[in-house]
Image (cartoon, rainbow, N blue to C red; front, side, top):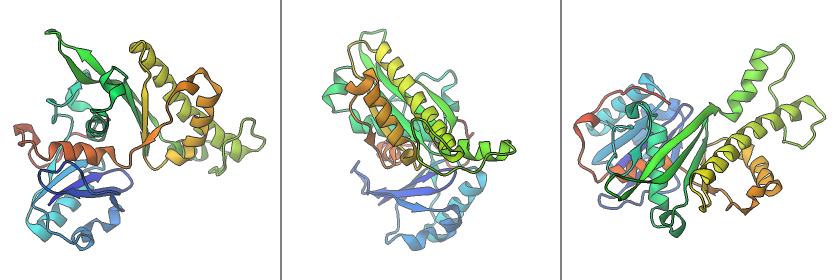
Length: 285
């Protein structure tokens, strides 16, 4: 069995797959950082290999490494944006600096859409991940010099996540609360005003990228995919915005429970590259 680890800023997701099978277990097992030393006790198997993605820093990486070696005498092979370039083109100005979670999430998205008729016909795909930070990234086909086409990451946004926006207002101003509430069209109290503003900012960023992707791929309707723990804060506002605008022709957003784990599953059957040895790698977004 191959263990897959997605170490994020607030929690860690785990899944596993049988060698030769790209379909991982679902839903993922979710642990807090404090639960990581007892990782082995949460599993009923001893893995043969461990693949991981880490954006949570050296401390979390070290804890996972120690738990894996103590339980199974196995290292964690950490993957990032230096892996999987045969599967997807990376248009980042410095490709290796693209965050591991963003890159692996896009590999996972590609796994979900690669056989879809709309994608094969030229529709771009947008993955919005609503976590500590919100990232909104786009895949599209790009024609190569030899006339062939390849799937490519063409770029994306980073903005503070919904919860981080709320906390920053509470911490950075003298009179605003740590707001709780549901978005409304015309808020009449402070909590609702903050919740509505945050949801509008998140949804507006995603709608912006939808329009740009549609313009970049004329005649093809972008496909929307979403993930992350803060999605519930945003989904009502986004669905309402889609209904109120010309974008009501867009397909509803589709939920992915962990595209990073799906990206690791894509890499599980590949031979390790020289760049993908164990150890910490630069954490970039």
